[in-house]
Length: 402
Image (cartoon, rainbow, N blue to C red; front, side, top):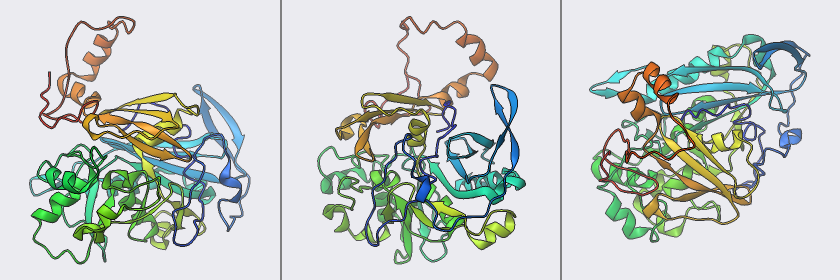
């Protein structure tokens, strides 16, 4: 989801890598007011001071970049963007790209589209700033799932998108998971995995599940099978216990599950072929595990006190509320992401900007919006959806647009 929030520090807390202890998922502070960058990269890069331009309130001003810079990318539902920031969150460069429409047989080739966009964003990073980039991370849409070849990394089937539902797998998932667990929703990653497992006749010995962010990051660091506990939540990973539960590990498809680390953990250096293709990036540049797009939007809003909530309106609509209590109930599409020692409680609806753009032009939306008084409740009982089915605030696969 490409939210309308300014991503001045969308991924700033994910870009300072943390080396985990061997064999465990390490915890780290994901609070925008903490500063873990001091011990982020073991190998420092020799940087020269550069004066570059920065737009603030449409005014050009100069500032010095003698420290490291951090590259974050946001992969939403309709396009992607990047921001290059320093440790104070000052933006040195930014840009965005819409996904190109590549067709494969009768459907969009989403994987190729995302890969092309990733490389386009890297190409857009100013050449003179590339040597300063110390680490890279990105976010992707939650529950967007790829089944890949565990040897080559190539997708074996079309990706399952974030809002795609697999009702055929829901009864089986409900039979193994705790009642009202996050995975007990037709659009959960686990339902998508189970649906593929039951309907695909190919050899499953060399297969692996990755999320959108995991796969895109693999293209940069080259180590297959790494995820983060934000993206892995909807496949059944327990972020409180830092492990997959026994009821999931006992299933035959558990062999496809990725290794899970904390968001922002160092995975490896930027691959040599990527540095060759996009000249200027340092051999010491680190690639870190990512997160989901709505969590990145929450971090960008700098809400740090329990009870504070952030809504992200893009193609769809999501809400996240910072809480000291973990709350999950699949009946209402409510789940909790871990954020250090607190929880982001919320959900994601299928309504949002995409259904409006399907019915109105940009000019119409702008003119009609001028006549809305946000202080008055609407008398209209509308519920705009692009298709049948809703995820939040009620999980109803048969809900009709209204």
